[in-house]
Structure formats: structure tokens, C-alpha cells
Image (cartoon, rainbow, N blue to C red; front, top):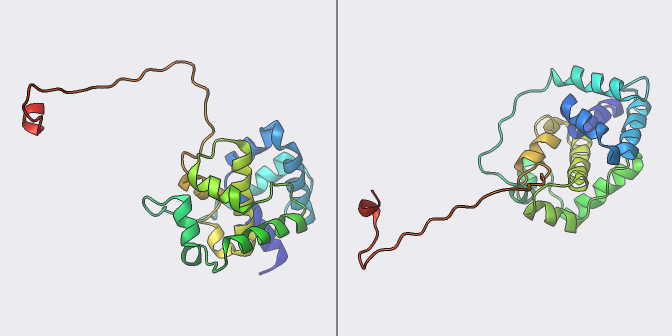
Length: 196
């Protein structure tokens, strides 16, 4: 596969929809990372000018050709990493995988956060509720798109986010209520019949 095609696959894996790119690029915390993606797009000859709209138009044009994909039922991020040889077509250790991801990010001059084994463990167990965790997931998606373009149409950032626990940023709730019920009996066992 040509370098330009790998670059396109990596970029589209990190930003599978125009909405994903817009949400990412409008977050002021991502300004440095956004600029490195724009520079990468120009260097790879995917876009002509390093501006947000050019990259959004590129993603929109390419999204039309993406096939539909249905996630396996009840899959989570931990299971994906355990079955990475079957699902992601990689038969390497997680440590080797993190090294390769970080090497690619450095080589392509992408300012996404480095992936560590401890962060992968956190992604398995915790909600993806911060921009940093989402960008670590985006690092993985970028690498998958570059190294395995044939599966990148399915295993992109959006899919990875969907299989992570509660893959959305937390909201600050100020009010709420909790309701609990307790059933007691005068010696009889409370079964389904009594409940009815």
C-alpha cells in the first residue's frame, strides 16, 4: 500500500466522521495536536492547505465510501485487547504495541499523547471521560489505521470509543435523586406470587 493511502487511512481512523473532527478541533486543549494533524495532512498530500475546513472536507468525501459495521455484542475494550490477534490482526504483546504506536506518532510528528501500558489498563477499567483519555484512544486508532488499513474502516476511533465503558465526557450534575425500596415480611418468604 502506498504511503499516501496509509496516511489517509490513519487520519480517517483517528477522525472517522466530520463531527469527530469538528468536536476535536474546536476543543482549545487540542490546538497543538490539531495543528500537527493539519501539517500531517499537507505533508501527506491529503489536503492542500493546513486549515480545519480543508481537513473536514477531506473526511466528508472519504466517509461516503466507508462500509457499515456492526459491533460484536457485549464487547468491551479489555476483550478487544485480549483478542487483538483475531480482531485486529496483531500477534504482538501490549508492550510491543505501545512502543510501535509511540514510534509512529514520533515519526509522523503527531502530538497525540504517548500510549503506556498503565493507560491501556485504565482504559479497560475506567470511563473515557477526559480529553486526554480520548486522545490516547485516538493514538491507538491512528496507529491501527496506518498499520492495518484493511480493518481501519471498522476499528476506528468511533468504534473504539463505543466499546469503552461509557465513552463520553462526564457532565457535572448539580441535582439528583436516589430512590430505594425495601420489602419486609412478617415471617413469610417474599416470593414472586406475593410480589404480584
